[in-house]
Image 1 (tube, rainbow, N blue to C red):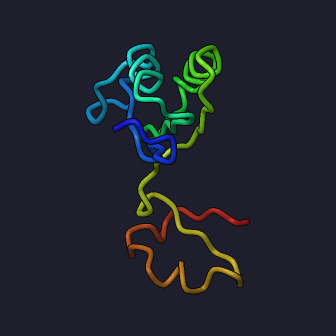
Image 2: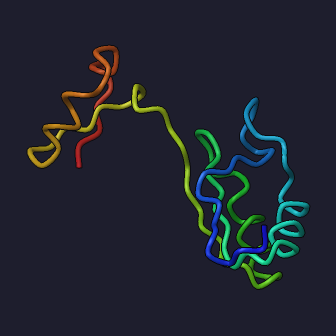
Length: 100
């Protein structure tokens, strides 16, 4: 799969407890071996590995894309611009709100 047009945009590292298994250094080695020019890290609910991921990928010439996946049921976004989004949020999310 040596296609520089392909980029992993949803990938959990070993910092994503119970969901990810790959360590950052082997991930960087494999990404470089496959000829990819970028890779994303989207761990669940934390960004503990972000600095290690960033530095390791940069050292190998790979563009690091850093994100964090959080369940939509945890928080409810309320804004006049996001009325469609709030309609899709779980009723249990009513207790916690994020105002933007």
